[in-house]
Length: 84
Image (tube, rainbow, N blue to C red; front, side, top):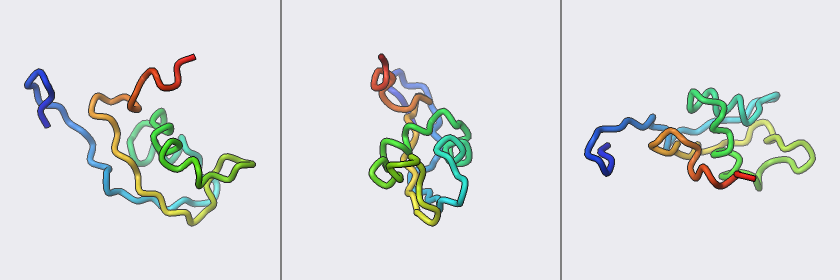
């Protein structure tokens, strides 16, 4: 993929990846498995917050997630989104 400066950047292809939640899974752990970076857990949280158990903020085991793509610049999307 070419960015605006004309250099080639790489993006790990995860757009069509699905993940079935197992007992004990965490958002960080799922992100570590699918992105290779647990810090990208916010991507999964943002896409599926309505499917999280409101008491534990965990997914019910067996939930199938279609994993959202990571931002091409390696960030979790908008870096200002969670700034205090």
